[in-house]
Length: 102
Image 1 (cartoon, rainbow, N blue to C red):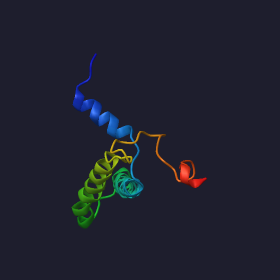
Image 2 (cartoon, rainbow, N blue to C red):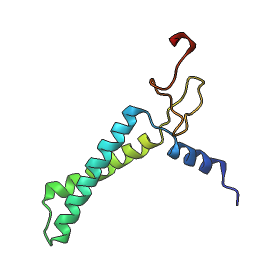
Image 3 (cartoon, one colour):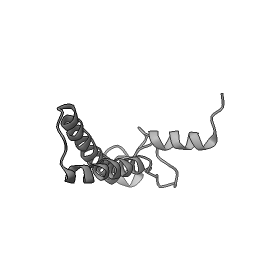
């Protein structure tokens, strides 16, 4: 079965390397969203009734960071040639040596 081109593009972006800044953004967003989900689940599982302020901010604490993490995940690192860098092939200052280094 042949996959559509748009699906291959999404799959490629999901598996590619992310820039360091967006990895940090993705981690923070996942932490905030996961904490909000855990708190709300604990309140409802314990039979408690959440406060009105929690009911007001909960969708934003869950949705906005999850959306930001999703967008950050699809951001790719590009090499010097302008092509996306695949995971495991990213350049490192310690492993790449130019002729001028000798």
